[in-house]
Image (cartoon, rainbow over all chains, first blue to last red; front, top):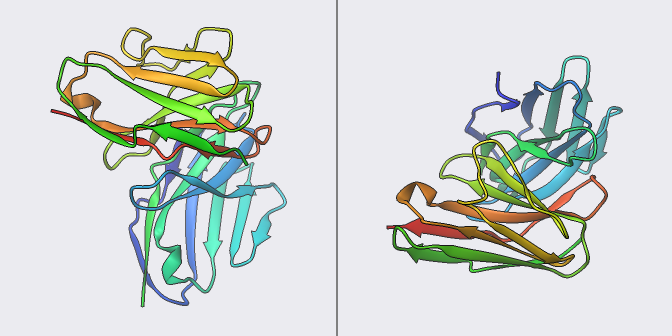
Length: 111
Length: 114
């Protein structure tokens, strides 16, 4: 089983649609969870951290289920500018601070 | 968040040669990380570079192939040695500048080995 596994995608949605990305991780000792966004030929940029209680930032909602080792990202009212690859990222425990990346899910929002 | 200047942004190199990639951070950071992103793939950690000690390499990566320097808390280099076409990839440096709650990446070095 891969350490971090994401929906393979790609996702093609119309503007205004709601889209959900799913991610699972294998290491139950993982401590921190993130969603990153990577535009074509650019570096990854932090979109949001994911907390156990769930968190929302505007149109974006992230949720974590530690029991199921599952992370999700929901994008509401999608915009053309949301088109990017979304990376699920998990940080291992201890002082290692090692990040493990999922393969990413490509989202294309169409006019 | 920290601002990272990574150089070069891209290069085309002959097989058998070496390329050194530099990352300069605008603030002092304890740990710097070097990643590789092969075409169509996600990021894979090569090594963690701490100032004043040898870098810690991940499985599948060795110091002879990817020597790293970390002379101070704002700078690091990664060298890709004796390159082959399989080393063609994007190399990125990263820092943890928020105590583990977010990582900032350099803009990446797109390497093509011919």
